Amino acid sequence: MSFSSCYSHSPLPFNKDIKLCRTVGQVKLNFPFSITSNGVTEHISRSRFSLSGDWSFIGGSRIAVKPKATRSVRHPKRSQIHASWFMGSQLASTVFTWGTVAVLPFYTLMVLAPKSELTRKSMESSLPYVVLGVLYAYLLCLSWTPETVRLIFASKYLLPELSSIGKMFSSELTLASAWIHLLVVDLFAARHIFRDGLKNQIETRHSVSFCLFFCPIGILTHVITKAMTKTTRKDGHGL
Image 1 (cartoon, helix red, strand yellow):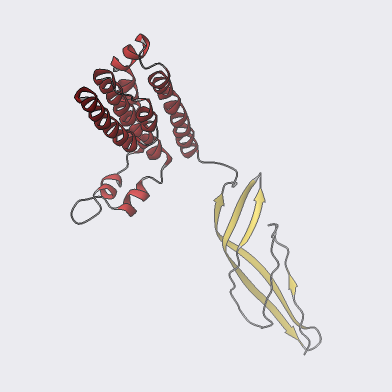
Image 2 (image 1 turned 30 degrees about the vertical axis):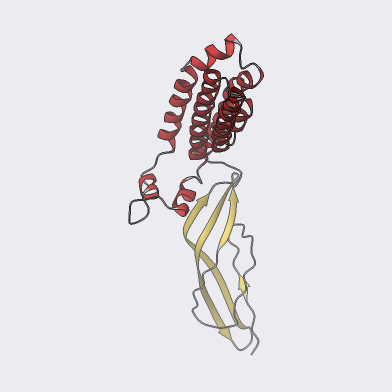
């Protein structure tokens, strides 16, 4: 007995070939197909095929395949970017750049002109901390989610864990807010070191420079410098 098959043409332009087993009878097959219409890709997630046929000794078996789309899911193009994600990433990048640039003049004055009147007045002003504080609060509100509290108090002792903090800082907005937080604290520590150096006549330029990116090291070097300066002065007076 000869076997032949024919396929009925569907109005849907399928992108994949169909391979059928050589069986005669009523069979239901599921195949995924994708079609393109007006620049949007549609995915036919389930397509049911009805097989109908007739048999004769002369012509053999003839099978007709008729796909019936039961459900379609529309997927946008991959090139499209979610608007809120794009705005959040762009805002985080902008804040990161401008926040860093905003504190550089103060460090420059403390290092290059520590005894000038402009530097002293700049270090007495609280305006930089107010501006950066407001910016930090704004970013904190944007990055705050219902999951934030759970990540902060992740352990059974209501203490943060390293893995949970890593998940929390996977957001660029959260990273940007943390960076602004560090800039404020570092500048505040640098100002304290600078003013303490003026009061006690201690060299602070190296310690202030460390505070820009390595604040704990800057504090440590200032403590060491202050102790060494006092020791040297005592020895000088003793002689």
